[in-house]
Length: 113
Image 1 (tube, rainbow, N blue to C red):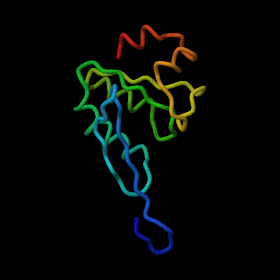
Image 2: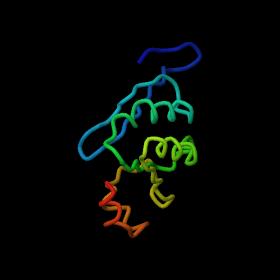
Image 3: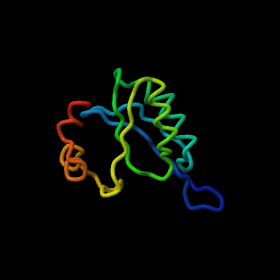
Image 4: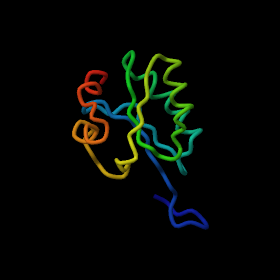
């Protein structure tokens, strides 16, 4: 990473999705993520890579507009599920192991995935 005047380093981020062991729609971007960039990635990159009638499981990051993301997903006949606040987004976790603790919907979620 190179130095930028007024800052120590240039900020580069990556957004991607995971399905099983596969990484879907990786995108590298400069700066910080915001709702506009995320929604553009979600609709323009992720949605086209999903199998029909998929469910995207998202954390509760502040730039995830639940209403707008749900509308985008529904427009393409997909669903969105947001993780409960009891699961912190900055901790690596297995959805299969942690969702039942909060939702008690293990079999329903696995069926939809």
